[in-house]
Length: 212
Image 1 (cartoon, rainbow, N blue to C red):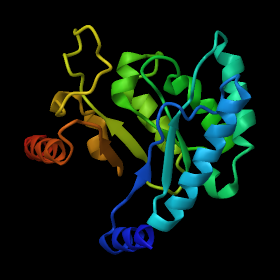
Image 2: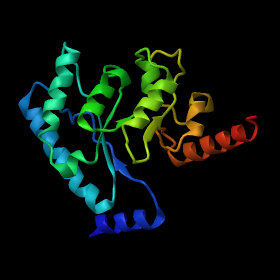
Image 3: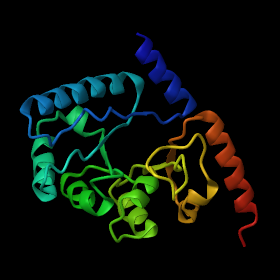
Image 4: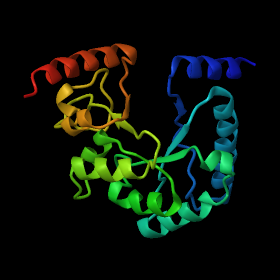
């Protein structure tokens, strides 16, 4: 099977892979049909993740639906509908409009679900936690696994009309300096993909050489 060959290749080359279901996979929706489809989608992705050797299936917290606290309770309740295969790979990510790291960290700690900390989203939707504090707290939710964080830059700059939109590349100034001291997998979310990764890596390498 092609999926299994992909998994064997990733394992041989020590490539970490993961899935990021689309925005329609919402576990805390008040619509039972939406939740049912979300569970089915996550179970399918977990099966494929087994074949491809992917260790994460990352989703956002969902919607607030007028009551953020109640929405988080619904999220926790519906996590119990997932199989161990799906739940063992599930991660939650703070988004740019609704759920901050401070919102999701209690859920992650209580349910044993790692937090994928997105620094761009946190800047768009702040919560009082510093980048350093949020990074440390998120890293602690991963246990013995290497944490996975996200980085991106705004398409039109931080003063633009829609700072949540992703740029083709990463502004090195947006990369948290503290991350250079941590053992992390950093997922670059940029339209230029591998070109953006190479450009960021070069900038960070040059920066590291001049850090006293």
